[in-house]
Length: 110
Image (tube, rainbow, N blue to C red):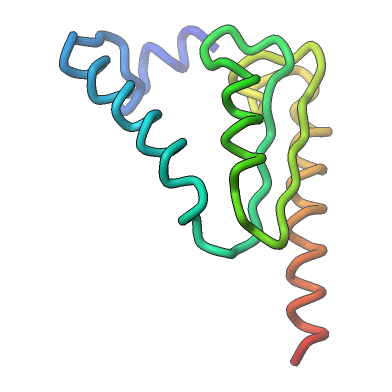
């Protein structure tokens, strides 16, 4: 995974004070604007051992969403990149199930 990350030009490897300031601002804006989130299906998957983001803050943001169809899944023992964990097949199956269910429900409504 390290070798892959080193070769990924889109991965942020160095941060500046400006970058951090903008990140904090974006997080604050996301929390303040949570009630304005569009009413579309939303699935949030959070690593239970995430050391990059505060999982409690993520849950507070999720709970503030005024969305009719939303799902929150905390993955115990997983870290920040839940799709890159050894359990990734289970993670992919979970999100595939979420999407498939919504597509089938949408299809039935026509």
